[in-house]
Every structure is written in structure tokens, then in C-alpha cells.
Image (tube, rainbow, N blue to C red; front, side, top):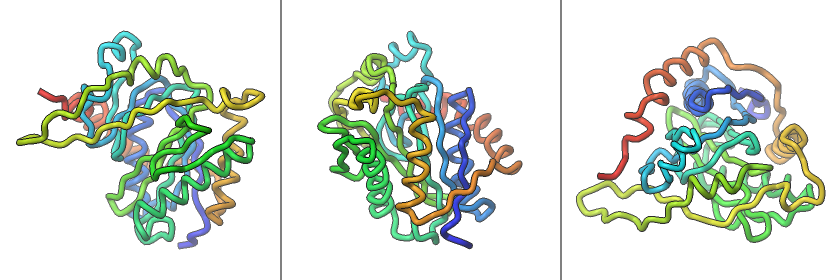
Length: 262
């Protein structure tokens, strides 16, 4: 395998459930060796996406989501709850476990992705920092977060960058601050870390659209990963797997709400 060549996917569906299901389909495909290391840029219609080990009623105002018409979808990766709308740029990297990007696990991969994102933001004149593995700040406010999964023979690291998201809506649907429930005799759920957030366009002198930001991300990832991104598409097998995961997992309440607290 040529480790320097990655597949570039600029692919999103109108259905948020399909976008989240595709993340697992790509993870499985790359892990099996059926597809090369892959970098995906994508946008999502309004949704709240929770981590694989979270309880939705502890992280999300479910009544507010229902009123806003926002689905709550559980992803394959760990980490905290995030808000998606068309003002958010999502980025995902998939590499087989033997690949240099994935070979040493989460910590160095998160460090590497965090360095790329902060470099891209600094190139725009933003005082960006990466104070923890999963948090990227613009000044004192969170602008991007990272999550990951290491399974099915591959490593996934993905994140969301707030560009011109509806932060008022975000605060409504992610507003719950309930204390952790007692863990005796029950699962200890992953909890989100609530932080003040900001949009890219709130800290820039001139607003940018997602199409403005995508090439910067693309080229910065290429340079700092010492990689070549080759535009491509999903395979027929990946589409078939996506349809299966969508129908049997991601579209079902049994998956998305399986850890609702009693």
C-alpha cells in the first residue's frame, strides 16, 4: 500500500442518518482493505450526534430537539454530543491499523489532527490552540472537537468545525447540565464537557463559506500528513453496506436511544 495516497471524498447526503451510517461503512471498508485510507469532508442537515457510549437524555434536551425537528443519532465513535447544521464542516480520517497514521493508536493520531486543524485556523489569522486531545479552541472558546473509534481493523478520527452554525439553536438542544447519575449497579456513561463555543465567522474580519474553508483544510491536511489526496467516490460495496447499516442500525430507536436512563 502507498501510505502517502489517500482517497478524498467530498460526500454528504440530505439524510443525516445516512451521513452517520456512512462513517461506519467507510471505517469497515478501509479496515478490511477494500478501500484505501480515506479523508472525507462533509456537511450535515440539522441533527444532534451523540457518542457511542452516551445516554441521550443526559446530554440532549430531547423536547427541544423534537420541537426543532432535529434527529438524535448515535455515532460509531466515542466522545461527547455535537450539534450539526449546514454551517458546520465535518472532517473524517480513516486508516487501517497498520497505516502510519493509525499504528500508534488514538493519542498521536488526535495530536496530529489537532495540529493540522490549529495550523489551518492560524493560517486564517485565528489564535487557535489544542489544549486537550479532543478540544480545539479559538481564543478561549471551543471551535472544533475530535472523536474517534478504533475497531473493524481501522482507526477513525473525525471532528466538526463551527463556521456559521446556529449557536442559539445549539445552546437550546445541548443545554442540559444534569450531574452524572450514580454508577453503582449501572453503566457509567460518557459525559460531554460543556464549554463556551464560537463560530469561525465570529472571530474573522470577513465571513467565509464552507466552500471557502474546504480547500484550506484539504491542502493543510495534505501538507502536514505528507499525503496526496486523490478525489474519488464510494464503491458499490460501500453503498450496499451503508444501506444495510442505515436500515438495521442507524435509523432505529434501539441504536440511537439504547442507553436512555431509567
